[in-house]
Image: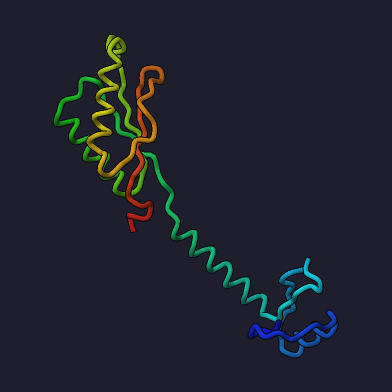
Length: 157
């Protein structure tokens, strides 16, 4: 193939290299397994530069999803709870995941159902912007759930 994409036909490697030298281009194997191998005349340095530029642009447009944590206790007040919900909704609007944790202290461990109800209520409050990933799970003295954003991951742009 020529630099403009036109077919130059079947030729020996020597002829192809001579043609590349005449035009000041490189001979690059596109498909070495084909019979006969397909080669293209191109400026390899320019091609490599364009490829790196595209990869850099793709990396720049990526966004890493962070996990934000919201902690509370089973005896949380209504206003405090609402503030935590608002903060979680902001995190979710930014496209992040949210881990909501209830920490039990002392005798509160006897009433883990209060924490479970609290977490389910929290998930219900965030239902319009989030989906519940995991049901409430007790891990030692902590019970937690994960919420994922329904909004696209590139919402922050």
